[in-house]
Length: 296
Image (cartoon, rainbow, N blue to C red; front, side):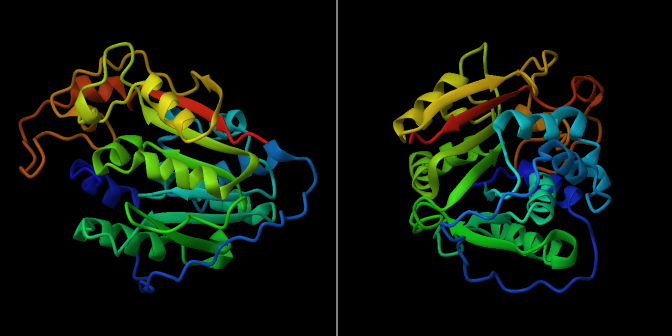
């Protein structure tokens, strides 16, 4: 389940507007046949997606911490890829991935929390509604397709039909929900042989990971072991999103830092006297950037 700290951040990350919210679409899965490869101008297409004026200004301001073009280049996204994003949340990565897919004749699928999950709550419903509203304009984003996932959901997609799967700062949520193994197994099944699982996550190292990563920080060894258990080969790591200023000992976990800037425990109102200056100076969290590959 998403942390309550994240709710305020998600509201801030989404653009407003009077767009009507469509009902959650019935999943339309990608076909196993890969789209025709466009001209080999990967970096030009990727940078254009990052620079797109359609992106929310508050998301662009976060690029200094999340390095979208460099991260996606490291992970190995390609023009024409069928791309699936696990729990896109506020849409930071969706803006780039959907724009890239649209311009390169690829496909984008957002895997949203399963509304049939008995643990589904009002916050997750709002997340789904905001996502559908935000990315419903095909002229702007192309066809943003959806599927669902959760502890009791079916396959993410037909076996071997996806080229690239991204999970951005979600591993701790999957740990809390108790379905990390299922999420990774479902991702493995959906990917074609040679397909990529891209992981961005708040990093606990060098200190130990606390129980269930309740402060939001996960150890690299834990993620690597979980991915290998699902059948993935470790494809390497990058320090693109490292932040050595992050001491990882904040009073409200990783959510003390921007962009959430928590000032009180979950369920309590913000503390107006809390001094954010120390945490704002740190910036966003130190993150691991890992690449995994499905053998074959």
